[in-house]
Length: 363
Image 1 (cartoon, rainbow, N blue to C red):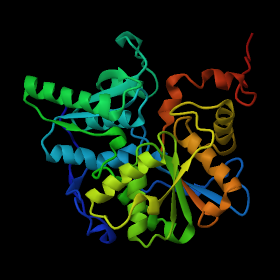
Image 2 (image 1 turned 60 degrees about the vertical axis):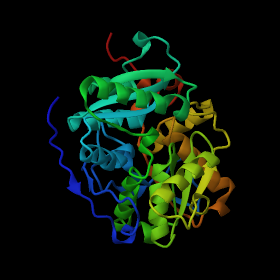
Image 3 (image 1 turned 90 degrees about the vertical axis):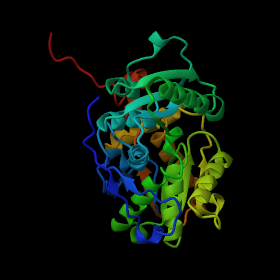
Protein backbone atom coordinates (compact mmCIF):
# COMPACT_ATOMS: atom_id res chain seq x y z
CA UNK A 1 0.00 0.00 0.00
CA UNK A 2 1.23 3.49 -0.83
CA UNK A 3 2.82 5.63 1.86
CA UNK A 4 0.58 8.43 3.08
CA UNK A 5 1.29 11.96 1.88
CA UNK A 6 -1.00 13.34 4.60
CA UNK A 7 0.81 14.75 7.60
CA UNK A 8 -0.54 15.17 11.08
CA UNK A 9 -0.61 18.79 12.12
CA UNK A 10 -0.82 20.06 15.69
CA UNK A 11 -4.35 20.86 16.77
CA UNK A 12 -5.00 24.04 18.71
CA UNK A 13 -8.63 24.33 19.76
CA UNK A 14 -10.42 27.67 19.73
CA UNK A 15 -9.78 29.66 22.90
CA UNK A 16 -13.35 29.07 24.02
CA UNK A 17 -12.81 25.27 23.86
CA UNK A 18 -9.35 25.20 25.43
CA UNK A 19 -10.52 23.94 28.83
CA UNK A 20 -12.24 20.83 27.51
CA UNK A 21 -10.77 17.48 28.43
CA UNK A 22 -9.33 14.95 25.96
CA UNK A 23 -8.47 17.59 23.37
CA UNK A 24 -6.81 15.84 20.40
CA UNK A 25 -3.14 16.67 19.93
CA UNK A 26 -3.29 16.52 16.14
CA UNK A 27 -5.49 16.32 13.07
CA UNK A 28 -5.09 15.61 9.37
CA UNK A 29 -6.50 18.01 6.80
CA UNK A 30 -8.99 16.14 4.64
CA UNK A 31 -11.94 18.49 4.19
CA UNK A 32 -12.14 21.50 1.90
CA UNK A 33 -13.02 23.82 4.74
CA UNK A 34 -14.97 27.09 4.85
CA UNK A 35 -17.82 25.48 2.97
CA UNK A 36 -20.18 28.25 1.81
CA UNK A 37 -23.39 29.52 3.35
CA UNK A 38 -26.11 30.86 1.07
CA UNK A 39 -29.85 31.45 0.96
CA UNK A 40 -31.89 28.34 0.20
CA UNK A 41 -35.43 28.79 -1.10
CA UNK A 42 -36.76 25.28 -0.57
CA UNK A 43 -40.44 24.53 -1.20
CA UNK A 44 -42.75 25.31 1.71
CA UNK A 45 -40.73 27.91 3.64
CA UNK A 46 -43.01 30.82 4.41
CA UNK A 47 -42.39 34.34 5.71
CA UNK A 48 -41.33 35.51 8.21
CA UNK A 49 -38.92 32.54 8.17
CA UNK A 50 -35.79 32.64 6.03
CA UNK A 51 -33.67 29.56 5.36
CA UNK A 52 -29.99 29.37 4.51
CA UNK A 53 -27.80 26.32 3.96
CA UNK A 54 -24.24 25.54 5.07
CA UNK A 55 -22.86 23.33 2.28
CA UNK A 56 -20.93 20.68 4.17
CA UNK A 57 -21.85 18.40 1.30
CA UNK A 58 -18.98 20.25 -0.41
CA UNK A 59 -16.19 19.10 1.93
CA UNK A 60 -14.77 17.06 -0.96
CA UNK A 61 -15.72 14.90 -3.92
CA UNK A 62 -15.42 11.29 -2.78
CA UNK A 63 -14.97 12.69 0.73
CA UNK A 64 -18.20 14.68 0.59
CA UNK A 65 -20.24 15.23 3.73
CA UNK A 66 -19.94 15.70 7.45
CA UNK A 67 -18.17 12.40 8.15
CA UNK A 68 -14.85 13.69 6.82
CA UNK A 69 -14.83 16.42 9.47
CA UNK A 70 -14.77 13.76 12.19
CA UNK A 71 -12.25 11.61 10.33
CA UNK A 72 -9.71 14.43 10.43
CA UNK A 73 -9.37 13.77 14.15
CA UNK A 74 -10.10 10.04 14.24
CA UNK A 75 -7.51 9.12 11.61
CA UNK A 76 -4.92 11.42 13.18
CA UNK A 77 -5.51 9.55 16.44
CA UNK A 78 -5.08 6.24 14.61
CA UNK A 79 -1.75 7.40 13.16
CA UNK A 80 -0.65 8.69 16.57
CA UNK A 81 -1.28 5.20 17.96
CA UNK A 82 0.66 3.53 15.15
CA UNK A 83 -2.37 1.68 13.71
CA UNK A 84 -2.24 0.39 10.14
CA UNK A 85 -5.83 -0.83 9.91
CA UNK A 86 -9.07 1.15 10.31
CA UNK A 87 -12.19 -0.79 11.23
CA UNK A 88 -15.62 0.83 11.26
CA UNK A 89 -19.26 -0.03 10.70
CA UNK A 90 -22.65 1.09 9.44
CA UNK A 91 -25.47 0.31 7.05
CA UNK A 92 -24.87 -1.27 3.65
CA UNK A 93 -24.81 2.21 2.00
CA UNK A 94 -23.07 4.00 4.87
CA UNK A 95 -21.72 7.45 4.01
CA UNK A 96 -19.39 7.25 6.98
CA UNK A 97 -17.94 3.91 5.86
CA UNK A 98 -17.39 5.26 2.34
CA UNK A 99 -15.60 8.34 3.65
CA UNK A 100 -13.50 6.12 5.93
CA UNK A 101 -12.53 3.85 3.04
CA UNK A 102 -11.55 6.80 0.84
CA UNK A 103 -9.61 8.67 3.53
CA UNK A 104 -7.86 5.49 4.70
CA UNK A 105 -6.67 4.74 1.17
CA UNK A 106 -5.41 8.29 0.77
CA UNK A 107 -3.44 7.95 3.99
CA UNK A 108 -1.94 4.53 3.30
CA UNK A 109 -4.15 2.70 5.80
CA UNK A 110 -6.18 -0.45 5.21
CA UNK A 111 -9.92 -0.16 5.77
CA UNK A 112 -12.30 -2.84 7.02
CA UNK A 113 -16.06 -2.13 6.87
CA UNK A 114 -18.66 -4.07 8.86
CA UNK A 115 -21.97 -3.42 7.11
CA UNK A 116 -25.52 -4.28 8.14
CA UNK A 117 -27.52 -5.85 5.32
CA UNK A 118 -30.38 -8.21 4.52
CA UNK A 119 -28.21 -9.88 1.85
CA UNK A 120 -27.17 -13.46 2.57
CA UNK A 121 -24.61 -14.15 -0.17
CA UNK A 122 -21.40 -12.25 -0.87
CA UNK A 123 -22.01 -12.30 -4.63
CA UNK A 124 -25.26 -10.38 -4.08
CA UNK A 125 -23.47 -7.40 -2.52
CA UNK A 126 -23.73 -4.70 -5.23
CA UNK A 127 -21.17 -2.30 -6.66
CA UNK A 128 -23.31 0.84 -6.57
CA UNK A 129 -23.70 3.98 -4.49
CA UNK A 130 -21.28 4.20 -1.60
CA UNK A 131 -20.36 0.55 -2.10
CA UNK A 132 -18.83 1.37 -5.47
CA UNK A 133 -16.37 3.74 -3.79
CA UNK A 134 -15.77 1.31 -0.91
CA UNK A 135 -14.68 -1.30 -3.44
CA UNK A 136 -12.69 1.16 -5.57
CA UNK A 137 -10.63 2.03 -2.49
CA UNK A 138 -9.90 -1.62 -1.69
CA UNK A 139 -11.94 -1.88 1.51
CA UNK A 140 -12.46 -5.31 3.01
CA UNK A 141 -16.22 -5.70 3.48
CA UNK A 142 -17.92 -7.86 6.10
CA UNK A 143 -21.69 -8.38 6.15
CA UNK A 144 -23.68 -8.79 9.37
CA UNK A 145 -27.48 -9.15 9.79
CA UNK A 146 -29.54 -6.02 9.17
CA UNK A 147 -31.38 -6.43 12.47
CA UNK A 148 -28.10 -6.52 14.40
CA UNK A 149 -27.38 -3.62 16.75
CA UNK A 150 -24.07 -1.92 17.46
CA UNK A 151 -23.65 -3.83 20.72
CA UNK A 152 -24.94 -7.19 19.48
CA UNK A 153 -23.21 -7.48 16.09
CA UNK A 154 -21.23 -4.48 14.88
CA UNK A 155 -18.91 -3.83 17.80
CA UNK A 156 -18.19 -7.56 18.51
CA UNK A 157 -17.46 -8.12 14.82
CA UNK A 158 -15.02 -5.21 14.72
CA UNK A 159 -13.26 -6.50 17.83
CA UNK A 160 -12.98 -10.00 16.35
CA UNK A 161 -11.55 -8.62 13.11
CA UNK A 162 -8.98 -6.59 15.06
CA UNK A 163 -7.91 -9.67 17.02
CA UNK A 164 -7.55 -11.67 13.82
CA UNK A 165 -5.40 -8.97 12.21
CA UNK A 166 -3.18 -8.79 15.28
CA UNK A 167 -2.73 -12.56 15.41
CA UNK A 168 -1.90 -12.95 11.71
CA UNK A 169 0.13 -9.80 11.03
CA UNK A 170 1.06 -8.32 14.38
CA UNK A 171 -0.43 -5.02 13.24
CA UNK A 172 -2.75 -2.85 15.32
CA UNK A 173 -6.21 -1.70 14.31
CA UNK A 174 -8.15 1.45 15.16
CA UNK A 175 -11.87 0.94 15.76
CA UNK A 176 -14.30 3.73 14.89
CA UNK A 177 -17.95 3.55 16.08
CA UNK A 178 -21.00 4.19 13.91
CA UNK A 179 -20.77 7.59 12.21
CA UNK A 180 -17.45 8.37 13.88
CA UNK A 181 -19.46 9.50 16.89
CA UNK A 182 -17.32 9.64 20.00
CA UNK A 183 -15.40 12.25 22.00
CA UNK A 184 -12.64 12.34 19.36
CA UNK A 185 -15.00 12.73 16.41
CA UNK A 186 -17.02 15.50 18.02
CA UNK A 187 -14.03 17.84 17.69
CA UNK A 188 -14.76 17.82 13.96
CA UNK A 189 -17.89 19.87 14.59
CA UNK A 190 -16.34 21.97 17.30
CA UNK A 191 -14.01 23.00 14.48
CA UNK A 192 -16.98 23.58 12.16
CA UNK A 193 -18.68 25.77 14.75
CA UNK A 194 -15.51 27.85 14.95
CA UNK A 195 -15.51 28.05 11.14
CA UNK A 196 -19.12 29.23 11.14
CA UNK A 197 -18.37 31.93 13.72
CA UNK A 198 -15.93 33.40 11.18
CA UNK A 199 -18.78 33.25 8.65
CA UNK A 200 -21.02 35.36 10.88
CA UNK A 201 -23.35 32.68 12.23
CA UNK A 202 -23.73 34.26 15.68
CA UNK A 203 -24.92 37.56 14.20
CA UNK A 204 -26.87 36.37 11.19
CA UNK A 205 -28.87 33.39 12.48
CA UNK A 206 -31.08 32.38 15.38
CA UNK A 207 -31.35 28.62 14.81
CA UNK A 208 -29.26 25.85 13.26
CA UNK A 209 -30.74 22.53 12.13
CA UNK A 210 -29.30 19.33 10.64
CA UNK A 211 -29.97 15.64 10.09
CA UNK A 212 -29.03 13.56 13.12
CA UNK A 213 -27.85 10.03 12.33
CA UNK A 214 -25.31 9.10 15.02
CA UNK A 215 -24.82 12.07 17.36
CA UNK A 216 -21.31 13.56 17.08
CA UNK A 217 -22.36 16.38 14.74
CA UNK A 218 -25.06 17.33 17.26
CA UNK A 219 -22.61 17.05 20.15
CA UNK A 220 -19.92 19.17 18.51
CA UNK A 221 -22.34 21.93 17.52
CA UNK A 222 -24.02 21.87 20.93
CA UNK A 223 -20.67 22.18 22.71
CA UNK A 224 -19.62 25.05 20.45
CA UNK A 225 -22.89 26.85 21.00
CA UNK A 226 -22.83 26.30 24.76
CA UNK A 227 -19.26 27.55 25.16
CA UNK A 228 -20.17 30.67 23.16
CA UNK A 229 -23.10 31.61 25.36
CA UNK A 230 -25.85 29.54 23.71
CA UNK A 231 -26.68 32.33 21.27
CA UNK A 232 -28.33 29.88 18.86
CA UNK A 233 -30.88 27.13 19.27
CA UNK A 234 -29.69 23.75 18.02
CA UNK A 235 -32.21 21.44 16.31
CA UNK A 236 -31.33 17.82 15.56
CA UNK A 237 -33.71 16.34 12.98
CA UNK A 238 -33.81 12.63 13.76
CA UNK A 239 -33.73 10.20 10.83
CA UNK A 240 -33.44 6.99 12.89
CA UNK A 241 -33.57 5.88 16.54
CA UNK A 242 -35.23 8.38 18.92
CA UNK A 243 -34.51 11.35 21.15
CA UNK A 244 -33.70 9.18 24.17
CA UNK A 245 -31.01 7.32 22.22
CA UNK A 246 -29.30 10.49 20.98
CA UNK A 247 -29.48 12.32 24.29
CA UNK A 248 -27.75 9.38 25.97
CA UNK A 249 -25.05 9.26 23.29
CA UNK A 250 -24.42 13.01 23.46
CA UNK A 251 -24.34 13.02 27.25
CA UNK A 252 -21.66 10.34 27.19
CA UNK A 253 -19.55 12.52 24.88
CA UNK A 254 -20.14 15.56 27.09
CA UNK A 255 -18.91 13.63 30.11
CA UNK A 256 -15.82 12.53 28.19
CA UNK A 257 -14.80 16.12 27.42
CA UNK A 258 -15.52 17.29 30.97
CA UNK A 259 -18.87 19.05 30.51
CA UNK A 260 -20.71 17.44 33.39
CA UNK A 261 -22.72 20.51 34.42
CA UNK A 262 -24.92 20.54 31.31
CA UNK A 263 -26.97 17.86 29.55
CA UNK A 264 -27.94 17.22 25.98
CA UNK A 265 -31.61 17.68 26.87
CA UNK A 266 -30.82 21.34 27.69
CA UNK A 267 -28.63 21.94 24.62
CA UNK A 268 -30.33 20.21 21.68
CA UNK A 269 -33.93 20.28 20.46
CA UNK A 270 -34.55 16.75 19.18
CA UNK A 271 -37.15 16.71 16.38
CA UNK A 272 -38.65 13.34 15.52
CA UNK A 273 -40.28 13.41 12.09
CA UNK A 274 -44.03 12.78 12.27
CA UNK A 275 -43.96 10.62 9.14
CA UNK A 276 -40.63 8.85 9.73
CA UNK A 277 -40.93 5.37 8.20
CA UNK A 278 -37.56 4.25 9.57
CA UNK A 279 -33.93 4.46 8.51
CA UNK A 280 -33.61 4.79 4.74
CA UNK A 281 -37.36 4.28 4.10
CA UNK A 282 -39.36 7.10 2.51
CA UNK A 283 -42.99 7.75 1.66
CA UNK A 284 -43.97 8.72 -1.90
CA UNK A 285 -44.76 12.22 -0.64
CA UNK A 286 -41.26 12.51 0.78
CA UNK A 287 -39.66 11.28 -2.46
CA UNK A 288 -41.65 13.83 -4.47
CA UNK A 289 -40.50 16.56 -2.10
CA UNK A 290 -36.84 15.59 -2.38
CA UNK A 291 -37.11 15.80 -6.16
CA UNK A 292 -38.83 19.19 -5.97
CA UNK A 293 -36.02 20.57 -3.79
CA UNK A 294 -33.54 19.67 -6.51
CA UNK A 295 -35.70 21.12 -9.29
CA UNK A 296 -36.32 24.38 -7.40
CA UNK A 297 -32.88 24.98 -5.89
CA UNK A 298 -30.24 22.83 -7.59
CA UNK A 299 -29.16 21.54 -4.17
CA UNK A 300 -29.52 17.76 -4.06
CA UNK A 301 -30.80 16.03 -0.92
CA UNK A 302 -30.85 12.31 -0.26
CA UNK A 303 -33.73 10.14 1.01
CA UNK A 304 -31.89 8.79 4.06
CA UNK A 305 -30.55 11.92 5.76
CA UNK A 306 -30.77 15.45 4.37
CA UNK A 307 -34.01 15.05 2.43
CA UNK A 308 -35.95 13.77 5.41
CA UNK A 309 -34.38 16.35 7.67
CA UNK A 310 -35.25 19.38 5.57
CA UNK A 311 -38.82 18.14 5.10
CA UNK A 312 -39.17 17.70 8.89
CA UNK A 313 -37.68 21.17 9.36
CA UNK A 314 -40.12 22.91 7.01
CA UNK A 315 -43.04 21.10 8.65
CA UNK A 316 -41.95 22.34 12.08
CA UNK A 317 -41.41 25.89 10.84
CA UNK A 318 -44.98 25.91 9.50
CA UNK A 319 -46.74 23.93 12.22
CA UNK A 320 -44.75 24.76 15.37
CA UNK A 321 -42.98 28.09 14.79
CA UNK A 322 -42.69 28.74 18.52
CA UNK A 323 -40.11 25.96 18.96
CA UNK A 324 -37.60 28.17 17.09
CA UNK A 325 -35.60 30.88 18.80
CA UNK A 326 -36.07 33.26 15.87
CA UNK A 327 -36.93 33.27 12.20
CA UNK A 328 -33.43 33.14 10.65
CA UNK A 329 -32.68 29.43 10.26
CA UNK A 330 -29.49 27.79 8.99
CA UNK A 331 -29.65 24.21 7.71
CA UNK A 332 -26.38 22.28 7.81
CA UNK A 333 -26.25 20.05 4.72
CA UNK A 334 -24.30 16.99 5.85
CA UNK A 335 -24.02 15.23 2.47
CA UNK A 336 -25.28 11.81 1.47
CA UNK A 337 -25.31 12.21 -2.30
CA UNK A 338 -23.72 8.84 -3.13
CA UNK A 339 -26.63 7.05 -1.50
CA UNK A 340 -28.74 8.31 -4.41
CA UNK A 341 -26.74 6.11 -6.77
CA UNK A 342 -27.90 2.81 -5.29
CA UNK A 343 -30.79 2.54 -7.79
CA UNK A 344 -33.69 3.31 -5.48
CA UNK A 345 -34.51 6.58 -7.25
CA UNK A 346 -34.50 5.20 -10.82
CA UNK A 347 -38.18 4.30 -11.11
CA UNK A 348 -39.25 7.31 -9.06
CA UNK A 349 -37.54 9.69 -11.48
CA UNK A 350 -38.88 7.87 -14.55
CA UNK A 351 -42.42 8.18 -13.21
CA UNK A 352 -42.10 11.82 -12.12
CA UNK A 353 -43.58 14.31 -14.59
CA UNK A 354 -40.86 16.93 -14.12
CA UNK A 355 -37.90 14.54 -14.33
CA UNK A 356 -38.95 12.08 -17.03
CA UNK A 357 -38.37 14.67 -19.74
CA UNK A 358 -36.42 12.72 -22.34
CA UNK A 359 -36.84 13.05 -26.11
CA UNK A 360 -35.03 11.18 -28.85
CA UNK A 361 -33.91 13.62 -31.55
CA UNK A 362 -32.87 11.18 -34.27
CA UNK A 363 -34.68 8.58 -36.34
